[in-house]
Length: 400
Ligand SMILES: [Mg+2]
Image 1 (spheres, rainbow, N blue to C red):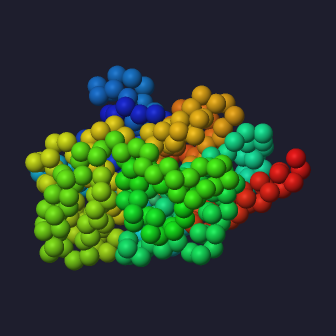
Image 2 (cartoon, protein in one colour):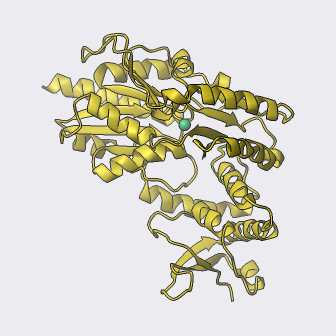
């Protein structure tokens, strides 16, 4: 028998392999005989929606290699059952590993199944470059508003987060975009840090995952300027974040490569330069600090764990706030386009999907669970998309 049974609530349309791994590593996974799996190219998994297995199961088929990885993760979790919180830590670590762009494939013989997976993913989330004309047709006669994440979207993910520079070419195209459309950069970084990278005054900045929003200081084509601070919903948390940064700097001093970044209203612990073998130990250190700070919560991104206030505010709320500030709250003539690469950007993709307005574009080379509608592979494709957007606008104005 090569069927695995698992109880959880799920949305079949959105459930990805990595989500299934995460859920399985936190559940009891039953595999009665693994031998047939070794000879099969694909494995079918049955998933029951009810803990008592009373409802009909849903079936998923996975490539063999992926399935064996899943079993390994489930075994690891079962071995750690007496260790409180180990499942959660390992799911963060697994998830960070999944989203790591530099992760090497285990062997070349797996490339067929990888290609199958990628092909079916790209059908669901087509390239925004290939779909450019369709996107622009939907935007005809309407106001496009651009939202751009920074790390991994405008700049590549690099080992040293202090050196995540934007290229001159990217800066120029973002400036052109801002002169043609209301444009915001929405990032987990502090506004000061991202502004120092981007060096543009024509745009809105939403730093600290949207908890710090500032308007343009230079006049853009919409006559908006000198707006300064627009919104800071977590101002009272600044001293608490400063304290936790100090505690974490001390705690992580002995972990080679670990880096703590103060983002003013939240903080990041970067794993980019830390050996993967000690990711779990570092995650444990980060998590342990929260025991004394119940008003803070932990979230996870690409090679980063973040601590932020428990207030209900995220990149999706920031997107809504900015649309409201621009006077588009109830407008049907607005097309927000949000481009981002990380889990925190999913909050914004979700808002757009729920509104049924605009488009989310995920930047990723690997298939990922997402609420976005389209995909781009990397910052160079983002650059190309933005250039085409500016050209389209100039051409449209010329036609009017
Ligand atoms: Mg990012």
